[in-house]
Length: 378
Image (cartoon, rainbow, N blue to C red; front, side, top):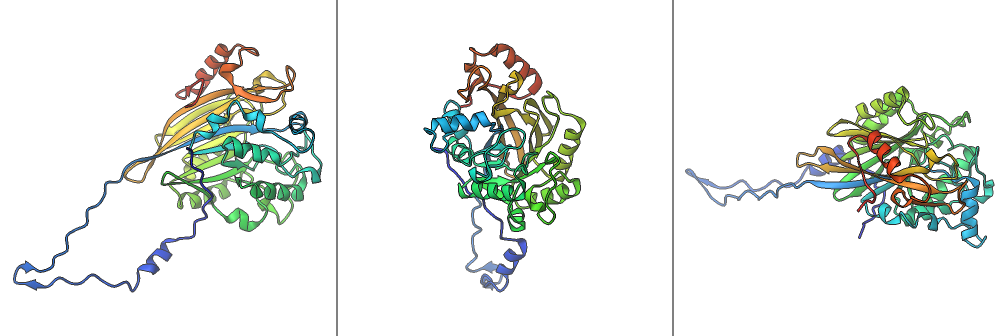
């Protein structure tokens, strides 16, 4: 069974550890007679350090247009919202990983702020319950829609996410919250998460409340990623950037990803284009996935209905270094308008009623390079 882990804020420092050793009793000095040592202590056997692995799965945009939460309202009998059925056919593939992340594209400030779809979103927080039930452990909370309901809405959204036990990064409700490192422990490894967005659709960040959303700022990224990387075995940077509906990254994406990589990020999980973009490896220890595409949404264009679950395996070696191992991608298809208002995410391999599955798979294999495109993740 999959084991869940909570965020761990790092409090022990090297200075603390050193201070704890001062004044400790010293081992007895062995008595020496001539050349013979009496009561010589035998050296303790050191257990060999074994490699350990962590499997991370990531999904793209959770973009709840009004017809999506309207369907959730109908599924709940028009009393509340039930998004759970929308994930039923992909649930096993989200749950069967050590850590699963999602891009929470829109705020979840709740009915108090008025629910709305495009262009200024606000979703019922029950979507967080459904994501958690589906297996998601952490959401990116830094997107171009983070401030769609203003500063108060952004803070309410953070509270709703936190109250539901979901970890988040990139958008916070206080300076203290922003300063708390996002670290998930799994299989003896500490994985740090940090997130940024290219902007907020022209909505200004309230002065003095810059904690509400972490904007791409190269100097801040270099400092913050490096600081987090000192506290963990591996660092994952989640960056909201790119040109919408473009199948390949533009120069700004590459430049920004390089800043994160140089600062110490082992894996960069990016998003925003609403279509699947390539995975690229820098070296055996670092890689970037430029976009996982949409996951749950109400967009009509067929290109936007192809998303997926990306899987990256991190291996901590005996020397403490971490290698980015095998990558797999399970494409998904979003059943939604205009063909249906069922609103359900299904494996692409089962979408033969809606499109040429083999042709789409072939295109993804060509675009994703060394990533293994699979029908299902075990």
